[in-house]
Image (cartoon, rainbow, N blue to C red; front, side, top):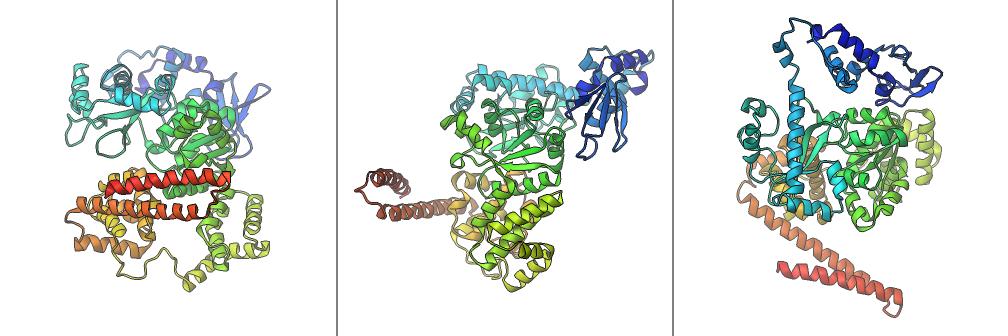
Amino acid sequence: MAGFIKKETIDAVVHTADIVAIAGEYVPLTRKGSTWWGCCPFHKEKTPSFSVTPEKNMFYCFGCHKGGDVIKFVMEMEKLSYPEAIVQLAKRTGVEVRYEDGFNPELAKKDTTKDELIQLYERVSTMFHYLLTQTEGGKFALDYITKRGLSMKTIERFKLGYAPADRRWLKNFLRQKNFSDEFLAKSGLFSHNYPDIAFFSDRLMFPIFDRRGQCVAMGGRLLRGDGPKYLNSGDLIQYQKGETLYAFNFAKNAIRQEKKVIFCEGYMDCIAYHQCGIEYAVAPLGTALTEEQVKLVQAFTDTVLLSFDSDGAGQKATWKAILMCRKHNLTVKVIRLKGGKDPAEIMLNFGIETLTNDVNTAILDSDYILDTLSHTYPVDTPEGKTKACLSFFPYIDALQTDIQKESSLEQLGQRFNLSPEAVRRDFNNRDKVRERLEQRQPDAGQINNQNIPMDAEIRAILAVITTDTNQFELMRRELTENDFENQLAKNLFIILEECYREGDISFSTILSHCKDESIQQMITRSVASGEFSQNTNQMVADSIALIKRNSLEKQRDSLLNRIRTLNPATADDMAALNELLAEKMDIDNKLNKKD
């Protein structure tokens, strides 16, 4: 294809394309005289050395020495071949692509699959959107999202849709539109084993767009029935989930203008932020935040705000994201949402002002980590303070300047009432300190006793891990980590939740998340013995019921203790008493139903 595009077409593209506008989509530029300057998108730097000269339609970086014309810039940024970059720029500028005589169209077919798949996904997303907004079959899904506070304007903007419950409908529809079975088999829209069966069915659909606003993949949320809560497209020619951010096409201008970005949990959270006018929100796609996704926004901003769930898995995701962003020299803040609710709930129940205030009052990542460590370790003891400091040290390692490191060490000492000298000594000798601590007192998370008591909580978790991981979908619908009293069971539940959110809940992935070798041995021993292979579904269901009942009884006991401390003679206590009694009545009703 490269040798067949006419020189007149190439010249027209070079002279028509505005390199300042195109480069400005990837990196903020500031004009100084006749030249525009910014931080280079091709290497990491703090002082701008990347120049764009519009008169010559060229760019050059004085740091990494990359340079060239507008075609070269698009090739480098989008990882395209020379002819692909010309065609993309031609579409943007309205230049007609002409080829030399003798051009062999068969050679070009090799390069059209990506465009054809994008056209397919555009067509399917348009049809799903129609089924959601205009048909009786999609009405229940439309009712669901409107009751969650999404406006029709937002639904139209994000092109939300509905995939029919009939799993053969999509194949029949696309055949009628003259798509071949061979082409559809590589589209990612159908089962590999059953090519007539749609991958998405009876789900609320979220089209995933590339940075130019083209639909390249999809995510689907289950609203009824059994199955994984979310399904997401796998990697495709036109889409790599680890290099894409949901809503980045809508958010990139706001990110550039506001100089900040919000990384949030998922589709609905991201959409809620946008509907509230906070349009610099994006979300990873069914996986943990990746280096490539951070690099995608790094050219536009210097501040990241994290908005992940407040549960154990969400806290781990926040911690990993903090370290990753700090290593890229980004300032990081953490959004703490009112009542631990998600953005969509806050938008619906408390209003735009509350969500906006939560964003505006985000705390620095160091404060967030120190708050978390204060609740994780007994920091009123020397051992607890030592463990908290050792947990904080990786954050200091991730910081990029000596001033940042020094300030954080001082903050750590002030928080736990330690001398700066003691903190600095332990930081400089952290490996030895950690080794001495482990020798003296093994980590509470480790299992030293191979004969672990098999209570209902442990049995339920092990049955899910060793026999049927699909049962975790039921478990996470019914339980949270706070329902578990057994710490090991709670830790394993958190690991399962992490794997579930990353889209891979396979046995090997679960094992890789278990850092304690003794836990791995316990799991593999359970598999080898086959002790949970019989009546797994019933055992999990019974265990869930028992755990829920124990949790409710624990909540009721806590309420009764609080009720006993109140003095009904005071107006405030009387109001509080009525609220607590109402909560107790609700719990009693739930317990009676289970009886």
